[in-house]
Length: 154
Length: 121
Image (cartoon, rainbow over all chains, first blue to last red; front, side):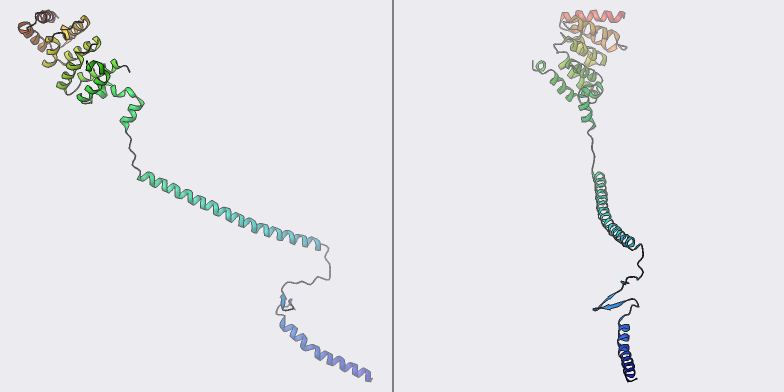
């Protein structure tokens, strides 16, 4: 009986000693699923299920695959953004050049020496009767002199 | 374009030029003194077509020019042009004055012949 009493007392005291520690643990763990571990709180459920699912390996693989896909998407987004930036900057440059060109064209005064162009295309055009009739006689005299230099000198 | 063709065009342009007096002077200076028969012929025809007192005097009374040219071709072309004129009044008047007053016998005889042709044309 004595042994039994002692043992019962020890058990009770042990129970009373244990209770504050449990309360303290419960106070530290704000996340009902979280467990304090050396000051760090693991937010995720890291406990393995007692029941090992058949598709555990498959799910892990799918997680890895999903992770790879996500990282791949991130990489793609970055590459896409950088390329889009270069495309946008190229478009802006082209637009600026086009506007500059249009402005330059607008400010450029274009003059055509139509008489000179016609005379170059048709070198004998200045000797057409119509053209000669509109020239002053003094100019016709010079043209005639150029055509017969030896005759006029004589 | 050949030089001769260019000169021909210049002569034709001078025949249609507004500055008639200057054109006649240039035709007289360059055209009637040209060594080329073709140029002299065309010049004489152009001067006759102008049908002014100044232009007709050059081809009718000047020795060696127009109807008095040594080249028969030039002289005949000048006479034909005179005969083609619609208004021959000024030409006949100059020819009459030449027949009466010109110092050169040869020029007077030529003028007389052309005057006779013009009378019967």
